[in-house]
Amino acid sequence: MAKIMYDKLNEQDRQLRAEADQLLNKRLLKILGRFGQVHITGSYALKLMTWRDLDIYVENENISVEDFFELGKQLASNLTPRKMSFKNTRTFIQENEPIGLYWGLRVGDSQETIWKIDIWAFDCATCLEKIDVCNKIGDLLTPESRNYILSLKDQLHTHPDYRDTITSMDIYDSVLFKNVHDLNGFWEYIREKKK
Image 1 (cartoon, rainbow, N blue to C red):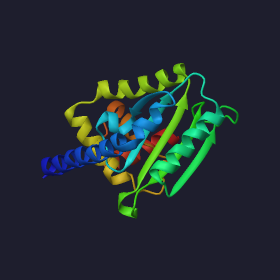
Image 2: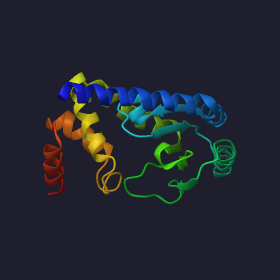
Image 3: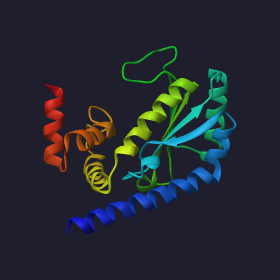
Image 4: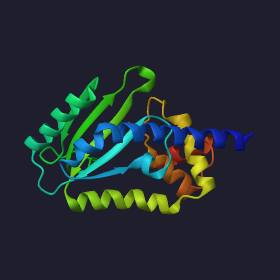
């Protein structure tokens, strides 16, 4: 039974990444490439996708707020997002946020096919540091831990606290460092973490 579920989750990841490839190759990579070196990271890079979510870094040592708004204009014109938000954590530093410029987009025709796209522009050092975190997670993954993470993400990504007080990093840490295999174990990990 578990094997069938894990096979299904791995197939879901493959399908979501294929869908993401279409979105990236259609217009997105070309637009982003005008503004710096593009890095696709997060669940796409780790092959741990359970929903339509892309994390992208634009590496550019000198990108200005004006240039970043030009990027936003091109994204809006070409992707016709239903929602778009901007954040500047260079000037307005926020706890638990990297220092950079951010566009958050919601792109898609219907509620069932909306993509959440997070685009950060970072200087080289910040970008390399963030990519290194993703690479270290990737190096630790085994077929078993990948299955546990996919299962937990699939169960948790619609939880009201997801992306607020619990994150993908909590899931990765719980499985990779605390040997969590199921939802009960994950909630126990969260309770212990909050103590």
